Structure formats: C-alpha cells, structure tokens
Image (cartoon, rainbow, N blue to C red; front, top):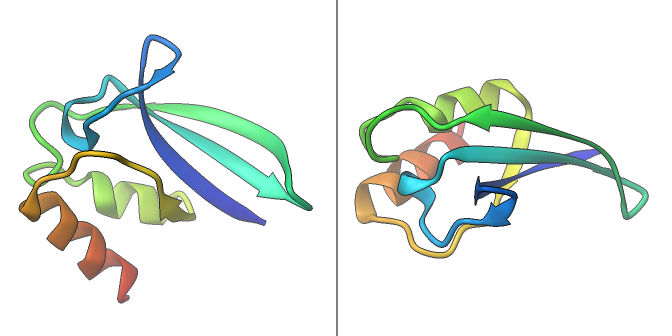
Length: 82
C-alpha cells in the first residue's frame, strides 16, 4: 500500500503546497483508493512547519503538489532521503 498526500481546500486540490487548508491523504492498494483522511494544515508556510515530518510519520510516501517554494522542497527532499 502507498499513501499519497495532496494539498486541498474546500474539497478541491489546492494549487500551492504551503497555503492549503488541509492535506488529504489517500491510501492506495491494487490501484484503488482504500481510504482517505484529512490532516489540517499547520499555520505558516510549508517550509516553516513540521508538515514533512508529520506526513512521513503517517506513512506518506508521495506528495502531489503544484506550486512549492524552495524551502518546502528542501524539507520534503530531506525527509524522503531518510
């Protein structure tokens, strides 16, 4: 199973990682969505929050996001290399 996080706002994909209202986390198995949960976005931008570590602790293996600043990219890449 893989968990995929998507930045969302009002049940739609948000176009910016660090400014979303929630992260919707989809659990995918056998090419089907088996479950989904929402995680409220912490205050502040993605580079200054601990969201990368939180998502990793939740077992997220992939982040799908459009716009993302350099700080957030660096944080996610650092977490991915662990």
